[in-house]
Length: 622
Image (cartoon, rainbow, N blue to C red; front, side, top):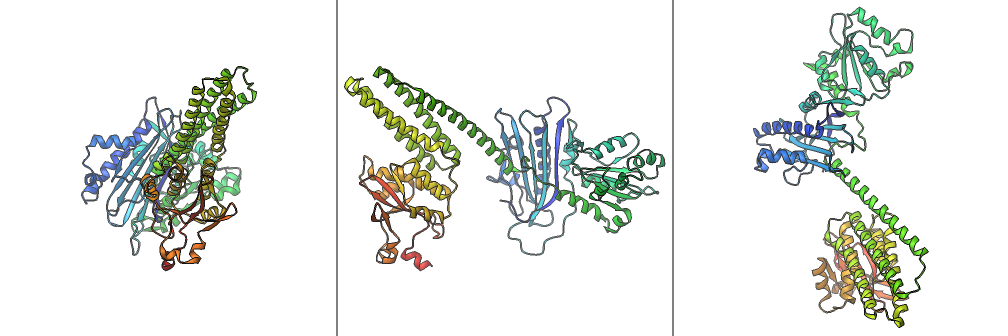
């Protein structure tokens, strides 16, 4: 759960390249974050606000392992977002790719402000890499927010700062930190004849995405901002800061006067004495009109922004750069992004499996079209048996895929589909037993062959229903349609049920559990081998949901209410009073399925699927 009032305090995104083989970037960043976290917790413990000592008595080695492997949750169950008032919270999560390598890792830490108890700081760090690449992408986001329940005037805006761990990451010796093709500087760079060429190359690079800040001095050596080092520190990782000494006449003529030549469009990109200029990506010195994108500020104006010992311009620039980020869909910033990456990887794997199954099914269809029945009946039966087994295996895999695609954690939905599979397998075993009993008798051979072909076609039709699904159900109406397609011999859905389903929004998982239990559990209760016992109790014991065969006395005496439970089916009026109840007690979200039992055709007829029909009780509530 994320807060709606989060304010960006610091935001950075950069790439890390190993300087030598064997450098573990992901592990290195995790170690830096663990050290930073430990230092934070040590300070919070002084105020009795830390999570580590209060939540678990874990040794340091165990914490390091859980932290680096992406399995740490303190307190238990915390998975990012809003923490607890006055307490810190932490979680890490990681994802392994198909080759078993760590693909991404994320860290979230929520801590209370030192002075404002209801203001919390939220630190998110994500590290990711593509399979086969040594380069890693690091995303850092620091925000602050007021905890839910706070009422009052918001506290003053905190001054801009750069987290210490950012400098630790940038200054680490085993790797190089870049933004695009620009290496990130860990401090301001004073330009001279030796390094001006690198500045020029970076400035004019068409692939540069990191802003460059150029500060010039006045003739007394004072920079446009009060403290260039402070500026470089506060925009660390968000921009590179360069300082040019305007007093050096020879250097000016050799460098800036040549780069921003007077009388050309490039002159409009220049940075005069005692000025600060911000060069955004995409500098084209031949397009003078575009120079307005790269704003400049004179020292006099910057000095006017000071208040006390604070440089207001530095604060403004730091916050502006933090807000200028646009997160890419491939970026991993927090724990939720790791979860999203895991889902995408799993979906890719499922799609690959589906493609292989579809190819296998197509080859089977081609083989069936080209098949010429054997003259020998025994050979033909053997062939049909092989086909029957192949179709059965395909059917099993399709059902497994359907369950995995649905991503339902509840075992009820899985059991419902497995029940259909078990039922089909029972039919197959019965057919195989009949073939064995007849012992290939000549007088029964044709009948057995026809029976096998019929069952093969039935199985292929079942598989076709699954393969024709373009996407898993996303609405209650689509769930109804899927149930009717999967079990056409057991369930029929009336138009009134679809209409009521279209007007209802509730617990999607609960709806599927109930609907999938109708052709399995409920159908077996009415038409299975054992039809003894109390229907309502048997259904409740097997599914956990309540079933009622009629309405209350007050509802039954109200003709208007009873007319809501009448439907037209096969030219006759039917009573759909029997109904299955969802677990919600709120009338607005109460899910109900009303049905009729067609004993002649052995069908469950669904007449209503959606919200609670009007009763004497709901009338009083209204």
